[in-house]
Length: 135
Image (cartoon, rainbow, N blue to C red; front, side, top):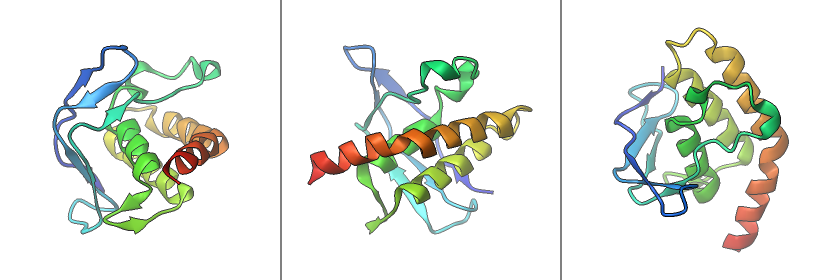
């Protein structure tokens, strides 16, 4: 099973809407010993999960954790270890990361799939915006 390797330590930004990573963290794709590693750097800013209002029933723990931060970072960087990746690859990693991180939560599968389907349906808006700004 894939794994996160350190704690998520963040500090709120003055607006209260975004958070800054105070320490970097890494994620091993696919398995704990994988050489495919994503490094989210110290100083990266996130808003955690941007859960649409119509998904109000999702539990609080699905918003404030490492998986949305990892997803935000990958939408921002669009690379893993210097290699370009697709939005589908990013969203698939997000699903894997949620299932990994929430492995002890009984309802993890349904919550992860709801969030995954939401980013598959609406994530293109953010992906396209981030591409336009970086061009």
